[in-house]
Length: 98
Image (cartoon, rainbow, N blue to C red; front, side, top):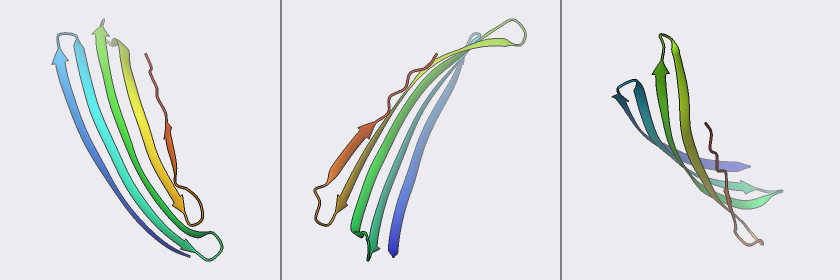
């Protein structure tokens, strides 16, 4: 079996203190490509992109206490192509927390 994989990860982050609050914004992007040649499984080509955005606010009160409020969104786009089959696309994952 022969496998070739390439991947990249990009990330941006911003933090800002405003009074008793600390706001965090982040963006992450992952990209990957995998080519596979296997005598039993055939030829496979996998490509994907994952994007994630997160915003949260840490609000301090008292000496050592805080409340964390935020939201995150993540989207996975994956394409799988195999010889003899149609390409398939998958999208998934949304999350909100507080």
